[in-house]
Picture 1: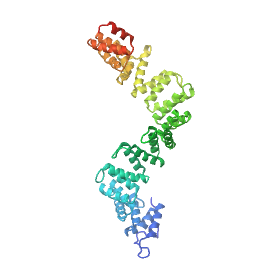
Picture 2: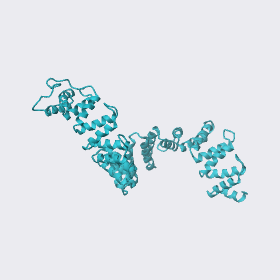
Picture 3: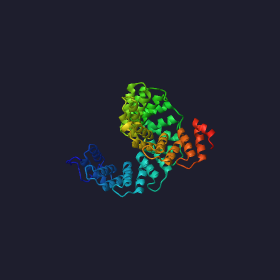
Picture 4: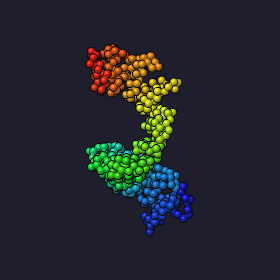
Length: 463
């Protein structure tokens, strides 16, 4: 809110003629009042001089009408005063005019006028205006699309420290967007941003030194940039730094530093990072009960956030008693969570667990359901077991044609017993007309893979 009007400010009075014709002192007082947040007083001091043509007063009047400071918001009046100041060459006002026309504030959207004012401000070195010129050329706003010219504008803005412009430069060179692809130039701009402290650019530099993109591989420099980004809280960089400390690729191997970084990243609440933290404790913690408990802790955190790999791992750890006491109910709970999320191995394990239960606890329908889901998702062992269920007629009449379809899919995936059984079904004509050629094909496949029964039958059966 603006301050109350004060007496003796000269509000509404015409500027005195003579000694202070341009109103520098009053305009300065108005600027100072604006800086203190005394907007009504500022407007009273500035408006008479804006009407007399003082560009600084005109610009600040535009700002106050634009933001509703000391006066009701009036975007048309704001644009009026901005244009008055812009017409006298005031760079800030030219940029403001460009933004108003660009966004349709105080006027209909007018891309041509926006570009005209952006270019005027850019000619005076405004980095935001340089960026906006590039953006308009990039997206074809104004009179034309020209990605190469856009890059020229972006590079000028980036050289003056504009981070969004720098992002365009690095990405355009990286992807060959409007310019010949050049990983070296992409790295140049990423390093500029990295040196200015941008964590995303620092992480990108790490990637490029790690992979040798536009520069010779240098794992030490990669680790340096990952650590710089990690120190700013960049979770991706924390994980990448941690991996390098685990492997020693950056010149130092330290499981302690790796785990500390993984825990920092996991603390963000990302299921992916929590899972990776759990993996680090699990892979390095075999034989250490404390580390296995930590592994399970982070796995469950990730599992609760829907990470299916973590859900599977929780199922495994509860089933095997790793980091906790064995608990088959919790094991099945997490396997089913992962299975519901489309994890093929978990779907197969769920089928096997329901299949293996004894007595009334055995649930053949659930077993068939999960074997079928895993089979449809390409799980080879599940395809074979699913085919066997149709072949044997477990809980249903035998369906030899359906059995052959699934067993043959498992055979195509390299399942040895499935290859042998396919051959026998083609010999016997089970679920299909007899076919010696296909029988011979599958016997040979099984024999080549080391199946002794297939080798013997190839010698004694007339195929």
